[in-house]
Image (cartoon, rainbow, N blue to C red):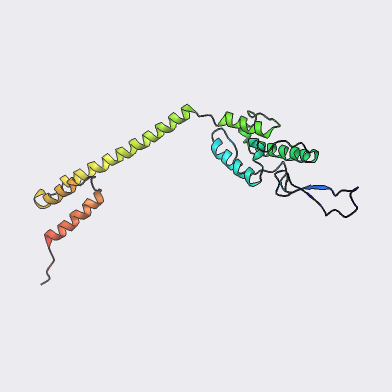
Length: 208
């Protein structure tokens, strides 16, 4: 991990090395406004929105170079100075996750001090495939399809009633033509076709 000094070492100052500082681009670095009380996502984890919440949290943590604390890729360092910084950032990440949990389910969530364990526990608890929920969604989808089919049947019945009500001696050809179209045209299109046919039958109006 990259460490930078606050000033260049002066010749002959080997006995007094400059204080160590963390590179601002390091995952061990926290900006002045990035405290444990901060909320880093507007999406609160509830019992039914884990996917949306996890995507939002992942993006927010990655933008801060901190998601590695959740997936385990940022391991605990052995260097004493870096270890101290790691612990500070790690605790902050844990608190950010806890801050993003809705109060309605907060009591059911474990409170581990390890960000990776907390992230995994939340996935196990709220990302479980709910068979009943899937069945309910499929039922709703089926009902939507049935509703759409019912509306299509109603439109078809209206179209047939309209065509059947026409005078066959005048509009027989257009009746046959429209009924032969697959899929059937809309009632509006058939109506306009009949109006045009009627104008042709009547012919131009001659003014005397």
